[in-house]
Amino acid sequence: MGLKPPIRRAIAADALAVQALTRAAYAKWVPLIGREPKPMTADYARAVVEHLVDLWEEEGELLALIEMIPAASHLLIENIAVRPDQQGKGLGERLLRQADMLAISLGFGEVQLYTNGAFASNISFYARRGYQEFQRVIVPPGSVAAGSVAVHMRKRLNVAASR
Image 1 (cartoon, rainbow, N blue to C red):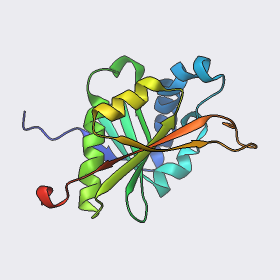
Image 2: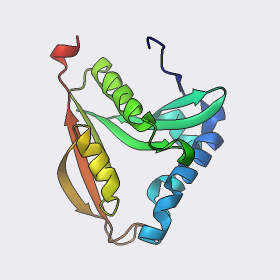
Image 3: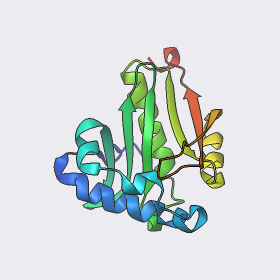
């Protein structure tokens, strides 16, 4: 193809669109876990300023996004969301590759993420793309997600081969 992916970094003015897309993308999980998943309740006015949020847009429409946080030793994917009518078309995989490239450009050899243990299809999706589970954590009492299991996954990147 040779075309540059239609990705741009979010700005403060994008916060409402980021929130709306995330809420739509995660709504399917509410019946499974009996509450809104964490990304549905996040403060996106803050996130688009404090985190790296990349937006996938086509013809002026937001189709997908990935929210990333540089940590001390890795890039953390905090949220990846694809509009429901666009799911299954490869946008999530492309955004994961975007995160890989960003991690390498920042000097990281690893990307991490976490998902709800009840979201088996997400765990499988990430595993098929090179992520390995390394920790399961029961969310402590007092949290909205108390008692749920967070599955932490990581993907090691071949930094030397990409330079």
